Image 1 (cartoon, rainbow, N blue to C red):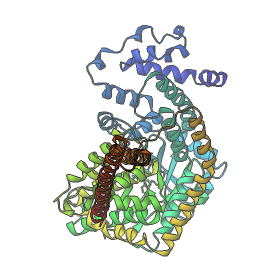
Image 2 (tube, rainbow, N blue to C red):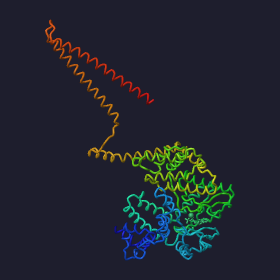
Image 3 (tube, rainbow, N blue to C red):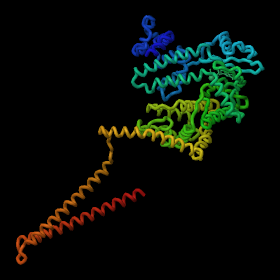
Image 4 (cartoon, rainbow, N blue to C red):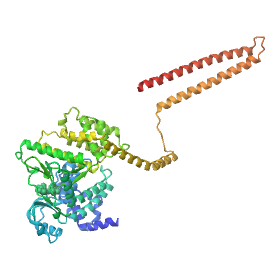
Length: 575
Ligand SMILES: Nc1ncnc2c1ncn2[C@@H]1O[C@H](COP(=O)(O)OP(=O)(O)O)[C@@H](O)[C@H]1O
Ligand SMILES: [Mg+2]
């Protein structure tokens, strides 16, 4: 708690600002009830004149008010909103749609501040490194601002420069966000996701994004990976002018897809652009497992020959071979209307515990999802829609996808959206087919099998490690008399019947033996020359015993025959 308090004191100013914005947009009740307001005392005046939400916003929906508040709160919150808008497995559709409208245009940082930032990064060397830097920015986003520049050797570059002070705002916001996440977790029973985990994941993601060296390295790696493909490119990174806060990239002189008009390219070139974009994304996601996670039209340039160049590699995803295989199987399963396959992929991708969810219900939901595609031609299947549906199904069961899988799905549906705009007749699923087929074929290659054996043996080892504790748990249950087994009732009934009939037989046999012995004694003790009562009784006893014996033999023969027939019938059925 003292640590938290220290955070709160350090962030007090920002904290107060956040609370005022929340109150302004009609979340005063939330602030009051959750005790968020207790952190800053009333004397700070939050609940003064502005204690009541401003009337103009009351008319608007909760989601809209939340978006407006986020826009006013700045970069961290805008970024969080943008991330959440792509996480339909975490937030309800209405919220996701509203958050997708978040504006990322931000006020321009004046050039003298930019210049000062460069001086701090390259002390005394700015004029040595750069011939010139354009004062007018090309773009001003929430984290960074982009300026054209020329290096000493005349190379035209684009500088991406972090906003001065952004790191402090981010770390302060991050601490506050973690705190709010804790409050949300305590205050709300069932938000459908784990707020603290989401806040942490988000912090990690943001930290990666404000390290421009990281973006430089990803750009370099992707550029190298596509060096064999002349139609797909990434800008060169100039490391002599790059630091954590400044990224220096070769200037791309081509058309940004976001800016092209209906007549900018011929239909033939448009199709080429879409093909190149799709190939790039499928190769990154399905072949390489290392991908540009945000291939939207503002991050792709197109050359007059249809070749494309990706920029903005700040957000990248990684997926291992198994995950890529599951994605391939998922798409394949949908195109073949195979609900079982889709279900298995869902289970594997979301890392869900089959014991914890209602598999039967989930399977029927997945069946419904897959049924929509029955009879639909391959080229009519909308990959984005398939993946979206998949997300919604997961959400209904409170399941979350690993973040990188979400990124992959987002990358695929983003490029599909780009394609649909440029060339509506383009058939993405058919285009994806070779990549999917290759992955599926590789499933049974010796290398893939060796990999699976390795993974399986690792998981056996893990199971073996867990075994002692599992056994202890079972023993504990036995001791507490809590262990129950479910037998199949029908089998027990058969067993009871058999035991009963066996007992009957034994009882009858005993009875017959007793009668025989008794009869023998009677006959033996009777005078042998006359017909006496005792002798008569003895003979009757013998006759009765014989009859009973015959009847018992007949019954047991019939019973054995019935059993034999039953076994035979069962065998035949199994065949
Ligand atoms: N290498 C480049 N060549 C030309 N323009 C660029 C380059 N890098 C960035 N830009 C321009 O700057 C804008 C913002 O850059 P980007 O890397 O996408 O930053 P953000 O992360 O803010 O989206 C791009 O949309 C593009 O117009
Ligand atoms: Mg961008």
